[in-house]
Length: 163
Image (cartoon, rainbow, N blue to C red; front, side, top):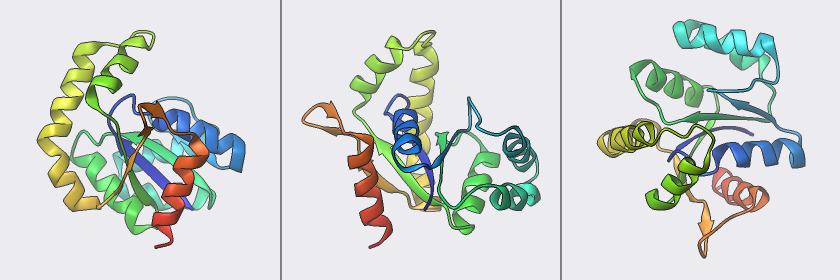
C-alpha cells in the first residue's frame, strides 16, 4: 500500500511512519526531513520542481511506502499530491485536537510556536479546498486522550483502503 500523510502539525505522522517502517517493513519518507535513500530524495526534489519528474520517483519507490507530507502549503504541493493520488497513493489526514498538537509542538526542540500558529491558520483557511481536491480519509489519532499505536492506526487506514 502506498500512503501519503497530511494533517495537523505534531499529530503523530512521523511517529506513525517510523513505527510502520519498523513493524511492517515499509519505506518511510518524511518529505521535510530524513530520507532513507539519496537517489529517492533526488527524484523527489526533481518532482517538486517539475511534476513531469514524479514518475521517476514513483518508479523508484517501493509498493509499501509512507510519505509524510505535513500540510500542503502551496499550489506546487497541491499538484504533487493530486499527482501522487493519481499514481495510486492513498491520502490520509491525521486529525488531532489543536490544543494537544500545540503542546506537542512546543515540546519539540526548536518548536517555533509562531510557525505552528501560522500553519494552523493555513489549515483552517484551506482545509475545505484540500479535502475537495484529494478526498483524504480522516483518522483520529487519539483514543481517550492517548495516542493510538502505529499498528492500530495502520489497521484503521487499511480497513478504509479496502472498503
